[in-house]
Length: 314
Image (cartoon, rainbow, N blue to C red; front, top):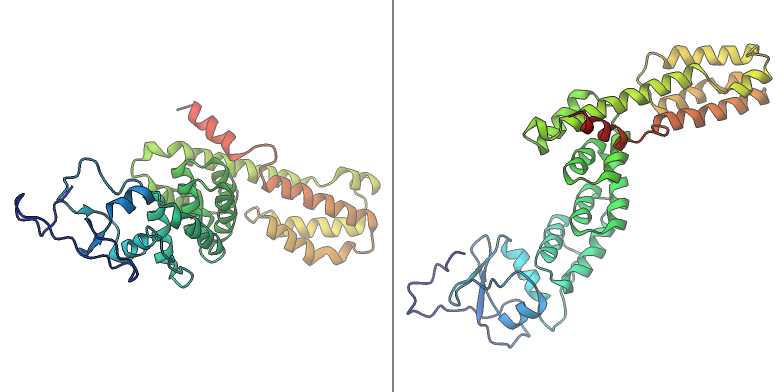
């Protein structure tokens, strides 16, 4: 740990600044914290011992400052939570500052700050889903992680997929993988390589993603070509002019496109008028939609099953 710049020698007693974090504080200061931007805060070792963990290093010499990697703005806020005085109102903080404060509170186990930070971070999940997802992931807040993770997947599935692979979060990884199957392989490679600089660390994930995508594409195509069999039986092996017209238009539009549930549903909406007056056709269309949705979700095959298969062959 570094020594304070004001320390000249062991014989010279270091000057500890007064406490600035709350004007009502009248406790004597006996220890200094130096932030990453060089500001020194005088504070109270007893408060640090009772209200935090990891700030006071047993190997630190008594005359040395506690040197931290957080900025002065964050340290100033953290120290306010380590006084038996009114705590700061964090509701007006910029999100970037709140997120950094929340991480620092977790890092130093400052429980007085952890609770309020958790509540405010959860409130920011809709506006900043990926950042809240990462925070909840690191802190182990499963409920917030799942909520923010789902929102983040809607916003940027590839970013979530790559992070979840790196963090080894299987549930979120599998959900995000489903949302990335429409992307090009080059995009997957580039995104994964941002977290792993060595190809051997993630090549099995990429291979699994390719196999998973191909499985979904194949299943989608098979269901598209072979819709509800019961509906066909009711139409005597599909002998329904309205259905035949509807079915052909669907195939022409979708067979040459990348499989996508939204595209299928849009196509159904576009041509549904053709079979509107046929109850059997309409019933068959609804069953077809369910089958397509199942195909796009992987059916009985999760992304994890492909990961295990790729890993076992390495």
